Length: 526
Image 1: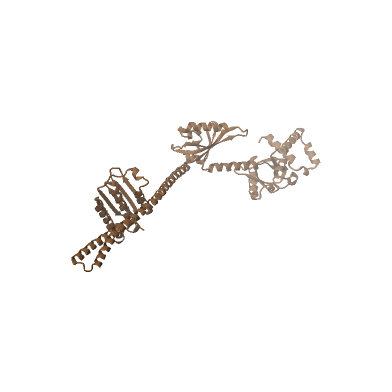
Image 2: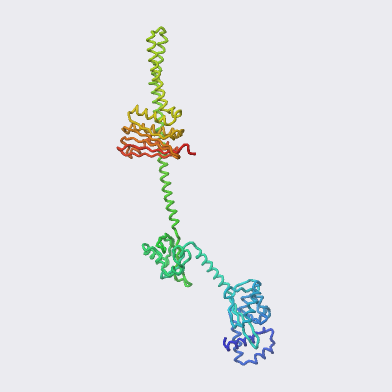
C-alpha cells in the first residue's frame, strides 16, 4: 500500500473512529480546524465514497466493536447503523462459526496483513438481523492511525450468485450423469463440451473429443446428409429424433436418434447448438425380435387356421367314413353272416325234419355245417379286426403288426418287411393304437395308390422317443398330392400324431417312393 493511501486511510479512521453521536460539536470543530482545507476535502470525499458504496463497509476496532456501518450494510443486514454501532461484530456471524471466525481474525491481526480476501476456499456466511443466514464475499483491511489499528471489512451479498452457481452445478451434474450422449458445438461445428457418456460410448477421452468437429463422429456414408441436418438445425429449424449412424473410435457403428437444440446468448443470437444422441441399438434389437415374434405368431395363426380347416374337413370326412363303415359292416353281416346263419338254420331244420336220415347223408350235412361255421368265425374275426384287432390288447403291438402286414401281403401280393427292436414290448395304450392305425392307413394308401412291390416298416424305441418309419418303393406322391384338401388319410395320421405331442414327416418324390417318419414321446418316460 502506498504512503498516500495509508495516510488517507488514517484520516478516514480519524473521521469515523467514533460514531457522530459520540463526538461533541466542539471536538468535531477542533478536529476540522486542525486540518487543512485540502485534508478536509479529502476526508469528505472519502466519507462520501464509503456511504455511496453499493457494497457493505464495516469498520471495527481492536475489541471487534463496530465503528462504521454504511447504508449498504444496513440493507444487507436489515438493520440501522444506530442499532449496531458499538456492538460486537459477532452479531453478524452465524453462531456455529463464531469461534472459528474469532480465531481467524486474531490470526490475521497477528500477521498484520494490509489486505486479505476472505473465504477463498469456501463460501462465507453472514447473519442478518432477522436471523437469516446468507453467503457473502468479504475482503478485510487493516489501517493504523496514531498507533491504533482498525479493521475495515468490505462485504457483498452473493446469494444470487451462489444460487445460480448451484443451479449450474445441478444442471452440469444432470448432463454429466445422463446415459445419453450430450455434446455442444459451435457455429463452425467444433465440439465445445461433452459428457462422460459421450466419451465412454465413443471411446475417446474428453480432451480427444473436444478437438474434433461434430461431423467427424458420423459414419462417412451418411455424413453428407447429417451435415445438411446440422446446417438446417443451426438455421433455426431444429431437429428432433433424426436417425443417424455414429462412428466409435474402433470404427464400430452405433445407431442413434439425434435431437439438436440451439444455444442462444443474452441477445437471443445463436452461438452454437447442443445435440443429444439416443443410443437405440437395444431398441432396434427389440424391434427386430418383436417383428420376428409377430411374424412367427402370424405363421402360427395361419397354421392354426389351416389346421382348423383340416380338422373340419377331417371331421366331415370321418362322418362320411363312419357311415360308409357302418354300411360296409351291415352289408358284410347281411351278406356273409346272414347267409351263413340262414344256411345253418336250413341244414338244422332238415336234420330235425328227417330223424331217420341215412348215416352217410347225416355225416355229409354235419361236415358242410362245420365248414360253414368255420367260414362264419373267420368273417367275424375279420370284421372285428377291422374295427379293432383284439390281439393288440392281448398280445401287444409286435404280433399285431406282424399279423397286419402278413394279411396285407396275402390280400395284395405286395412284399413286406418288419423291423422292431426289443424295447417295443413297452409300447402300449394310445401310442400303440396310434402306431397300429398309422401303419394300417399307410398300407391302405400303398394298396390304393402306390403301385409298390415292397413296403418296409421299422419301429425303434429309444429313451425319449418312439420312432416309426414306413418306406415303399412305389410311384410316390407329388407335392400337390400331399397338399390336397381331401387327403384325409394323411391329415388323419398327422392330427393323430400332433394330439400325442409327436412329429409327423412325409418325404416323397414322384417316381421314387414315399417315406413316412413319425416321432412320438416315449410312454415309459416319466
